[in-house]
Length: 76
Image (cartoon, rainbow, N blue to C red; front, side, top):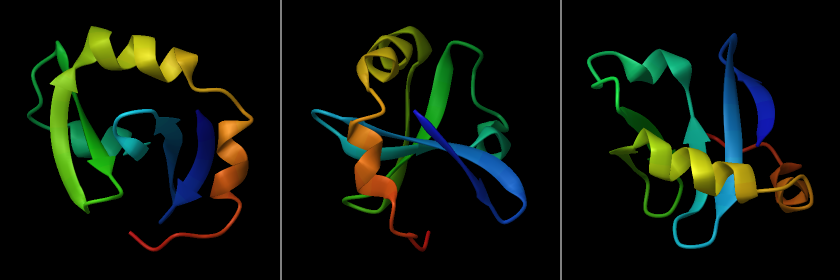
């Protein structure tokens, strides 16, 4: 995952094979159960919650070569 600063807070961006570009924002985790994580999915523009262990494994597979696609700023 690649780290960015968005509106003064840190967010992490990754490219996942089935979901495409996803964004993890720690501030959007309010009221999310401990075993789940809320991610912003770029296309289509939506947020969804996922089982944390499942996502963690997929994010670990995402590498820095994928993050070259994130060089351009994106408006959320």
